[in-house]
Length: 298
Image (cartoon, rainbow, N blue to C red; front, side, top):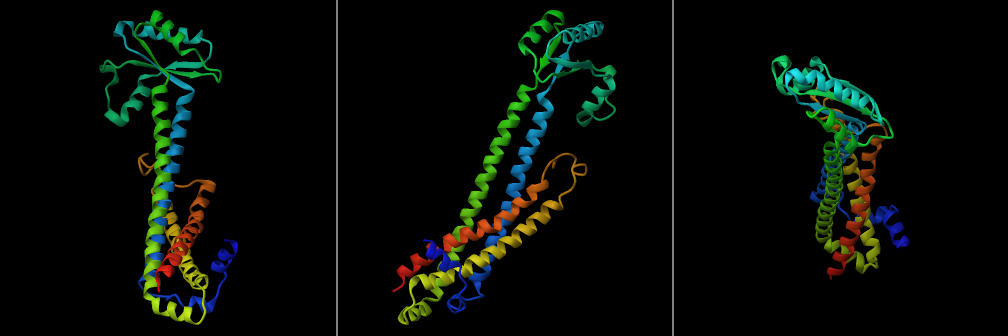
């Protein structure tokens, strides 16, 4: 196997003349590798962005909780004071404070606009809770709140963190599956191109066999040429894909919808791994197709 691989990768100008340097098989191989790598770059970027976004939101929610107080206006202040006192004496609570009307208006502004009349609406009072690294007994806190402030409801953000983790895991799986499907499609197209090139050069192959050329020698010429075409096309697709990712609008201009999309730091090196992978896929696909086709030729 090592000897055959060395034969495939060692340049041989005489053998390379067997494969036509231009034609539909040449541009089809390069275009397929470039287009598939371009799509793979975006699949990789979306997968990494989803993972980062889920981690960011999960970290933001992990050490915080919210208490919602729904009570008649004449009881709101008393129940808020009771909730703050319960939190002050609860082990595992680092800090707590009731949000002001301006803060609640800011929280609701993305949905209802900045002119929301908070004072005129029966909105619940929100209390922000920050826990210590050791955490607190959420069930015990709920029971104390139920006794001291019947209108208080604890939200420890568990129902928000769990869907984020599940969504991130599924998006990562879909990203990996998309890249695998892209690789399979590229292998299929390169195989078709190699078969077409071999069929078009059937007469040349017969002549080579007559003069003593072995199938390994002939197949190596096709493998080298198609692997190089795939590598060049994939490199071009990776560069274009990275440029496209870099030109995406910043987070503030995108309104938060594209938060975290793209590569960060060393993540920009990941797309550079795609061209070598595409070359390996082309090498394996072309090698298998070449030997299969050579066995079929008389």
